[in-house]
Image 1 (cartoon, rainbow, N blue to C red):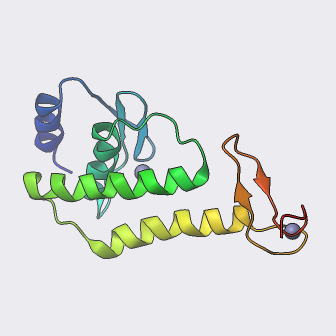
Image 2 (cartoon, rainbow, N blue to C red):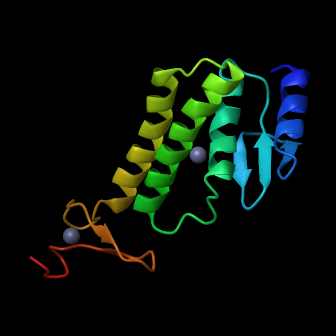
Length: 133
Ligand SMILES: [Zn+2]
Ligand SMILES: [Zn+2]
């Protein structure tokens, strides 16, 4: 990623802080961590900026987390047009897939294998083992 690109973002979004780090991330409320140079770094940066512009705070339940990831990518799509970054659908789907896999593994009941649901307090419940069915 070009230094000028980051400079431009700093000018366009003076309310946000862009810092360099080990991987791309958004730290609520206002810090965008810029990861190392890689093939899709501009796109990943647009995604983290998307989180910031959608005012994502904490991630709540895992289902909300997925929703926020999707929102941040939708925002990134607009940003990519504005900043002439190529929006690579395959990269986006791959990134979303890692969250889906993670959620899938996490939500499966260790006893019966059924997909559990998550209560607002973050705990998982199995409809079968806990006799909801
Ligand atoms: Zn994200
Ligand atoms: Zn179960």
